[in-house]
Length: 471
Ligand SMILES: *Cc1c(COP(=O)(O)O)cnc(C)c1O
Image (cartoon, rainbow, N blue to C red; front, side):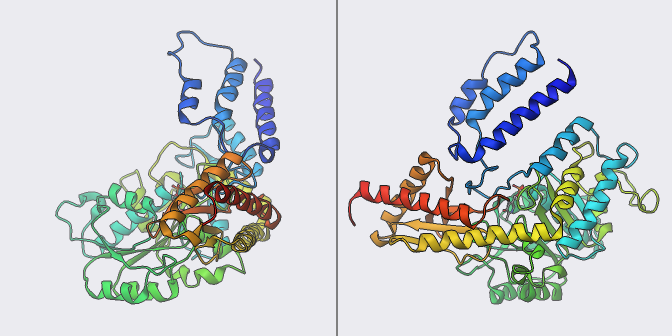
């Protein structure tokens, strides 16, 4: 098959899927075992024509696809893979650039330089910071914390990048009780241990208590790293950066912020109040594939001290300045050498939406979350558990029947909603209780769509209520 015909066919399949996504049930029809059965066959001894392979791929994959690209998908925290980013990503694949350095991939390296500058501007972070284009926030957190580890040890004359942690001075990691699980993974990968941390108590929204934070810092000395959060995965709450960062800084700590989605509050005039003071941290991790709507995989590791960033990640043995003024080697800022040219999709999304379009996207999702919460609150027996300050809404059902029965009703309502397929949300545990968690993080989700989805949620609950009989 001619390459043009093949690519057009793939594009036609993609367009057909995206045009119909809002009309499909907002869930897969196949679960894992059925998807596995669809793909499962012996290793092919002989090849097949490429267009038949494409047809087979679509037929086998589509029934097992979720709909994060649709307007009423609220599961986990997922972006919508905006068409502008997807189109750039098609080209990224087709161009096949190996984005290790500026000689091997001049355009891919250069576009990162510009997209990095735009990101710092959009997110109102220090302009001297360096930005690594990682797979997602997990690896962005890892990258930032590697820079932190190196810097706090270097300050006590230990070079962790060459000597490792054998015999190194101890680092104390201070973290909130409601940090995201992947932060603990990053600590594990870095040899800092996911349980070897000092945890700080949090309030009912998951924000660290400043007094408890200060108490923890009073109890420690030596190298330390404080990990703060913008956007708690359940509540959307942000730590009080203006209070916490100066406390940590007074003790010489490196301050890192996990802002996988919450950092984007910085892009909105309305919402940046939530992240006041965040700019005085030392590093920030965020995702492109959540609120910026780039396709998966895309995250950003942002480090104020470029040298600390490069020392932690660079593959060459020297930490010399860039090859020539202004030249960027992408591999100096992330763990990988060969990788996808993530800068193209990032550049395209920012170019397409612009500063005002990105602010509008954040505001639109936050408005939609507020509307969702208002509608749900209006129904007896439904409780919105969090303060809806951003794009996250967590909800319990049947709360007039006591906590245990509400767990059951919540479980049943989630199952019913998923079965009906008008909207998708999944469960999560919050304060030891089951909640329906809704994350409104798709460029198509506005107040009107949130209202339609809220009606579907209420209907699912009423059906469960009826099946269970009156309280
Ligand atoms: C999603 C998320 C992560 C992990 O990001 P990935 O892109 O999935 O690697 C980390 N922290 C928070 C707060 C998140 O929401």
